[in-house]
Image (cartoon, rainbow, N blue to C red):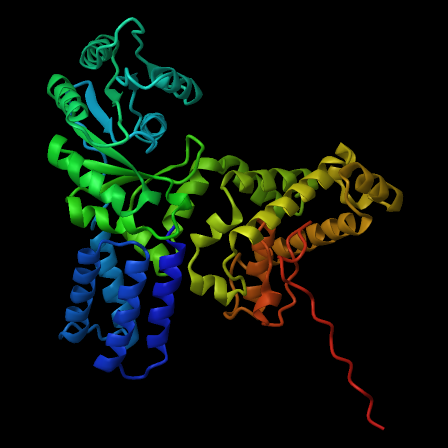
Amino acid sequence: MFESLSDKLKRALKNLRGEGVLTPAHVDAALREIRLALLEADVNYKVAKDFIAAVKEKAEGQQVWQELKPSEQVVKIVYDELVELLGGTSSRLVFTKTTPNVVMIVGLQGSGKTTSTGKIAMWLAQNQQRKPLLVSTDVNRPAAREQLKIIAKATAQSIFEKPESNDAVELAREAYREAQQKGYDTLLIDTAGRLHIDDELMEELVQIKGETKPVEILFVADAMTGQDAVRSAEEFHRRVGTTGVVLTKMDGDARGGAALSIKQVTGQPVKFVGVGEKYDALEPFYPDRIAQRILGMGDVLSLIEEVQSKVSQDEAEAQLEKLQKNKFTLDDFRGQLRQVKRLGSFSKIMKLLPDQLLGGIGMPQLDEEQSAEMERQLKRTEAIIDSMTREERGDHRILNASRRRRVARGSGTSVSEVNQLVKQYVEMRQMMQQLSRSGMFGGGGGGGGIKGRLMRRAAGMMGMPDVSGMMGDGSDAGLPAGLPAAPGHRKKKKPRHKKRK
């Protein structure tokens, strides 16, 4: 998400870094590019105009940080204003001690309301230890209630059903009573939607609101619709009184105009973003982290949280201990690759890392095509290990020529690919021994030094690509086990030097 805007903003700010002393002309030129980038990202015109005015006022004022260069000061100002534009601080759902707390989910038809209801229920159960009950009050759309029932089952959440009733307000009232009686602390009401805003829809929502007294009314909008989503959010807030916004399909929105405009236009914060089709593909919206991603600063906190939620800490520590004792087998390596796969695509993982860090170790950001290619190669690596016997996975030294031919046939790969995997697996073990003896990540700086090489090989251990050849830094880092060079990467032949006569 925000890829297009991010590229343009980083380019505009990069032009400032070459200047020793910033003049008003330099700042004006950068701000023109930033303004154009915002408008091309489908940001509301007034919001973009106010943003540029605020940045210009601070950049030309007396606000100076002694420890920062002039260009860094402008980046800092842009970052601060982006955070403010996106909502300032993260807004969590507000719950009271009275139970059940009611959360109404509203929005236009086709925006992803029903799926978001299930995602939010699952997120609350897993992250805030809530006990939610779901109910659909959409009595008009065919199979709407059946859809929520299927989602509730898939997310292991409870649902209230009363098939004989076609009264939306009565369904909400009965579900509220059910939640009270059976000890559910949260009731999520999936309301009806329309293809357009009409009085009948709004009247129904107002009646449900009056009956259940919700603590949160979340407007669900499709981020890909840009300013249409913002206008709908504004109208729903005016008529019903929303408390927050859920933006769906953010993973497919390279522009981000809705996310950047909605808080300033409606006054209501974005609380969640949908970043995929899976039911766990829902993230709380953190303005500071999003601003960091847009400006290429990475989002290490989100990466850590992702790893903690999807990778077993005990298993990771056990694997690290095996690595340090040189007892890490191909079986363990396969388990580690499977853990990495749970984190999502390579491009998603690398976008959470700062551009400066990736550049320092010779690993540029991957586009979706390169990411997909690396994931295909990861599957081939896994297939090679799967084709080995338990004894071979436990001791790679017994993999002689005939065994390697058999593994290649069984995995649909070539002997050279099997040889490459084994060779780089051995290199990885040696690298971890070096790290262990040197006090883990000690050593010099720079992408071409020992630390850069070790970090690249560590990335290889995680299944990430080594694309240092694309950067032309001349390092000798090995590729990750079983993975060929990233698309476009080719090893350069060493030039031959003629002997002097």
